[in-house]
Length: 331
Ligand code: 6V0
Image 1 (cartoon, helix red, strand yellow):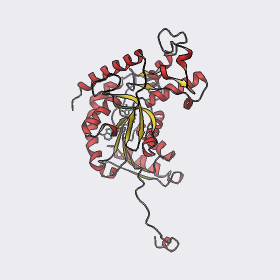
Image 2: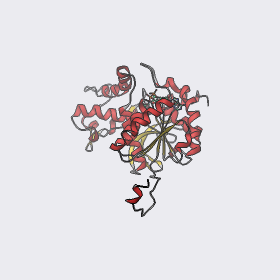
Image 3: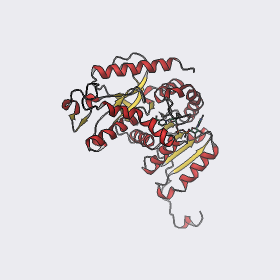
Image 4: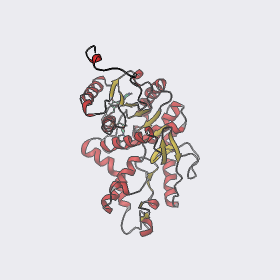
């Protein structure tokens, strides 16, 4: 220190708070894929990781710190004590149990509700102004649970929802059409998982709606069988889990995109989990995905996409299933 002070002539105090602190709770496959892509994409250089497994936490922290020379002078902290999360702009919850091979996401609900009951109040205690981003499964129900436990306004409790399903959909469309996924504009809404709803009526390339070229696209009577593409989306996670035991990279990239949108206040549109009360004829506080505008305050707007009768019916069906799951939760 004494040596360096001879050459560093201080002109200004260094700013400690970069205003982009992100906490990730759960340093499993999803948590670490998220942290890695946040750091390598330079979305934040201030990361805190929390978990109940001290050894894993320390190992992950040290491994990342050893990569610091390749990052943007990142501050990387980890610990089991939530005080280190103080003043986080965003708290990601990726903790809890995951699906076993062939297991439905909804099967995890009560076990992960118990996990959330331990985590949410702690995070809120140290970061009362934070935005929650939930990814633990079943993500839609757990976003509702986080909203209930936290007492926060709805725009500050967001679920990763069908941003990932939409990305899988766009990838599969891109393979069929030979056009980049970024130019295949398509949304999957509703539940992240088995009852998700592909909005075929608005799938478009440069404003050209595929439905105008094939009026039956996505329907049972479609001779081109585009419906199969959505079936593949629904099967994606099951297939990857069967092959490698878990999913990680795509969900990590999906969360990174959402976090970037919030921290940079960019007003970009993503399908994320929020309350659907008042949308498309839904009257209950059911949490599912719709396209939302994201910015520094969380969810800025929900987009009222025109839906066909078939799509609306599927969404209402999804909402019914969710309302049923929600009503059985023990708080
Ligand atoms: P994992 O690899 O088993 O990691 C879970 C981590 O959570 C472990 O490190 C645990 O120690 C930690 N943990 C458990 N309880 C607590 C607690 N009370 N406090 C702090 N940490 C705790 O699981 P993985 O990372 O694969 O999955 C995490 C969650 O994300 C699961 O619920 C998955 O089902 C869910 N996923 C959600 C996806 C989505 O698209 N929304 C995608 C993939 C997985």
